[in-house]
Image (cartoon, rainbow, N blue to C red):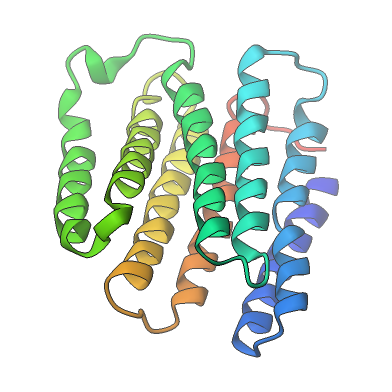
Length: 226
């Protein structure tokens, strides 16, 4: 029940943020952006509080750094400095997620006969990098580093196949894909051309991604929610 209420709160806050952004209410947008990730972190703690696995700490760190990125990116008047700081927060988040996914206990089937599953991931990373390259200017290196971490996170999600139950695998993979979509639209909107309804697309996919990754990870260890 608590998980359902926290999920409802998370998505409701997300909707309020999107509306606030379009109505140009910076203070409301900032407050609601700050409140998106805490419900997911609470869901994580409530459902895995009795389990002290080392990977849980890295997974929670990933959620925490996502929250840090959210806060820094939404600071009113933050400019490029806060954008870079926020990018750093999300970079750490992606690295935490990638580490957790790749080190999930079990035989790594992707590196033992099913490498072909990574081909679409690598092709997308290369295509996106080539597409953005001429628009990045001085941001080329930071964006390349970030994109590499992003693709590593998605590859890590793919590599969980055969290690976890089907529900957990599909949810985390779907979340990773939505995370990539959110960041890709953000990059195109910032560096190439404005994207119609960009905030709705970016935040809608982002919130869904974080929820799917969080709950999908929890389902790796338990099917019962607090």
